[in-house]
Image 1: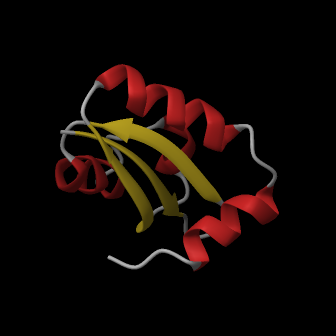
Image 2: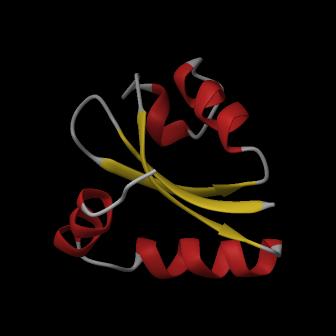
Image 3: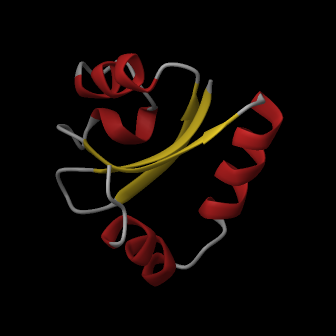
Length: 82
């Protein structure tokens, strides 16, 4: 499985990424071993994810989400139900 995900950082900002193991990735972010952006904004909380069959699809969706305006990203996170 390939995931595109968004986490909310301690400062309220949103970070978008992709991974093959979402639980491991969130743990890495919270241990300071994730993306440079989230290291100083811990802890992070998973607020949104999508599942894809291929890495290419997940990376394409990550790129698309990163290009959205903050309001649209907030709407995705707001409407997400696990």
